[in-house]
Length: 350
Image (cartoon, rainbow, N blue to C red; front, side, top):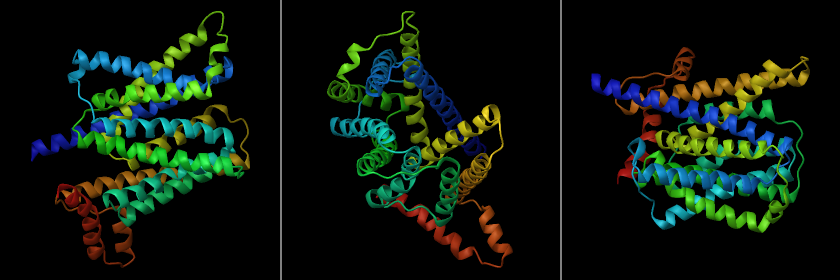
C-alpha cells in the first residue's frame, strides 16, 4: 500500500514538472520569437520552425546515440512517424496561416475548438467517452477563456479554411503524440527524436515553396538576431520533449487544458504589470480569467477523483456533494461515470 502511494505521489510530481516546464518554455518561446520577428524583422515562420526542428533532431540524435538521460535509439514505424510528423508541421503552419488570415478574435475561437475536436476524434477512433462532469468542467474553462480572449470576430472563407485545417491538425497531432508514444513504448526523448527528422524535412520542403525570399534577409550587424534565433532553438527543442512527456503522462485534452492555463497566465501577468487603467474590457477579461481558472481547478479535481475510483477507492467530488445537498441521489450516476471511464480502457486491452 505504501509502495502504491509513493508511486502515485511520484507520478503526480512528474506530471506537475512536465506541465510547469512546458508552460514556462512555451511562454519563453513566444516572447523570444516575438522579439526576433518584430524587432529584427525576421518574419519567416517556416524557416524559424525548420531551425527549431533541425536543432531538435541534431540534439536528440546526440542524446540517444550516447544514451544520455537513460535514453536509447528507438523509432516509430515509418508510417506512424510520417503521419505524426506531417500533422505536427500542419498544426504549426496552418495555425500561423490562420492567424495571418483571420482577426485575433476568430483565431482565438478556433483555438478553443481544439478540445471539442479532440473529444470527437477520440470518440470515433478510440471509442473514448468523457464523463458528463468532465465535459461540464471543460465547458466552464472554454467559456472563461473565450470571455477573456475573444474580442473582434471577422469571418472570411480563406481564413475559415485555414482555421479548420489548423484545428484538425492540432487535435490529431496531440492525440498521436500520446497514443503512438504509448503504442510503441517510447520515452518522451525517443518520441521527440523519432519525429524530429521527418518534421525537419517536411518543414524544409514547405519553406522552399513559401519562403524562398529568406535568403535575401539582412541580419543585424551585431548578429544579435542570430543569437536570439539560436536561443529559440534551444527553448524549442526542450519544449518539444516536455510536450511529449506531458501528453505521454496525461492526455491530449489535459495538454490543451495546460495550454489554456498558459494563456491565462500570460493575460494575468499583462494585467498585473502593464495595465494602466481599469476599463470595462479589463474587467471583462478578469471575469473570464476567473471563470477559466474555476474550470481548470474543477477539471483537475474531477480527473483526480476519477483516478481514485478506477483504483477501487471511495471518492466523492465536489459536484457529487453539491448534488447531494440538493437532494439528488448520486449513487446511480457514480456507477454510470465509472462505467464510462472504464469501457474505453477495457476495449483497448481487448
